[in-house]
Image (cartoon, rainbow, N blue to C red; front, side, top):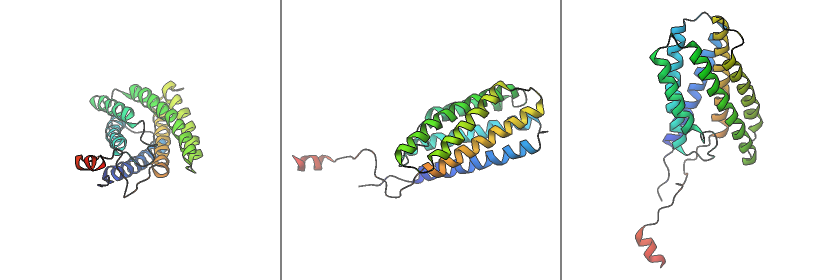
Length: 201
């Protein structure tokens, strides 16, 4: 029987880890140096969301062993691609749109990750509590980003940096703890040839 290729799973996991590390790094830079050009921030956000959307779609169709970390990534992948494309069209004029859309996206993903962490607990994954804690923190930060208590440019950049950092940490921990790659993983549907069916009659 032909085993399932692990290449998509490996690409998705490595992609998740790399983009999450990039989110964390850029988030720290934005928090430490909030005087970034809004145009540069818009371009980064657009490109990052396009890449992350593609990684999410690869993750969803990779069908890893646990089926936890990527189970909602079809919807989130498409939504992330659409938002990233919109941001790239006018990167310098969309800071409010970035805050609101990214805030809603982070909040929604955090809520779904809460459910995923509870599923991970039932699955016997030891780090489920870490995902739960990070998910709750991410939801809070996402809500803050949507309502934006202050509209000062520096404050918005710092808040965006915190949100990128939180999103990066959450997805990094999710990919490491909940994506299991097994080299000899069987396909979901076992095909039975016509000869085998006839022999079994």
